[in-house]
Length: 87
Image 1 (cartoon, helix red, strand yellow):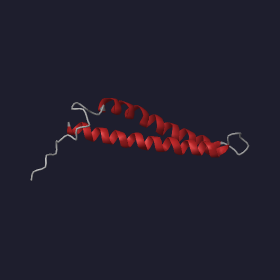
Image 2 (spheres, rainbow, N blue to C red; image 1 turned 120 degrees about the vertical axis):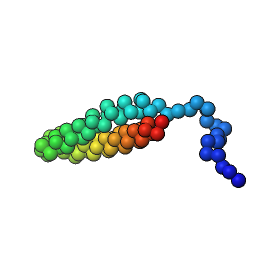
Image 3 (cartoon, helix red, strand yellow; image 1 turned 60 degrees about the horizontal axis):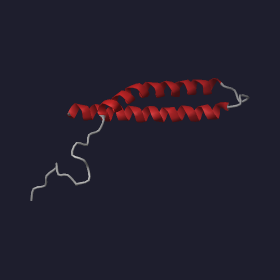
Image 4 (cartoon, rainbow, N blue to C red; image 1 turned 90 degrees about the vertical axis):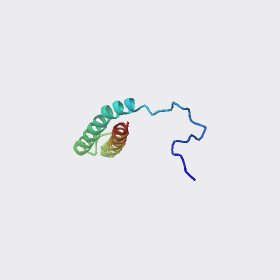
C-alpha cells in the first residue's frame, strides 16, 4: 500500500500558504530591536541603586523578557530562512 505525502485532510484550503515574506521582515526588524532592549535594560539594571523607585529587579525582569523575545525572533528567522531555501 502506497501512502501519498501530499494528501489533503479536507479541512485546509487548497491555496493555504505561510506568509514567509512578512515573517522574515518582522524577524529581521525585531531580532536586533529586542536584543538591543535586553542589553539596555541589563545595563541600566547594573547601574541603578536600590533607592531608585523601580529598583534593579524590575529592570532585570525586563532584560530577561526582551532577551527571550530576541531568542524567539531569531529562532523564527532561522525557520523562515530554512523554509524559503526549500521553495
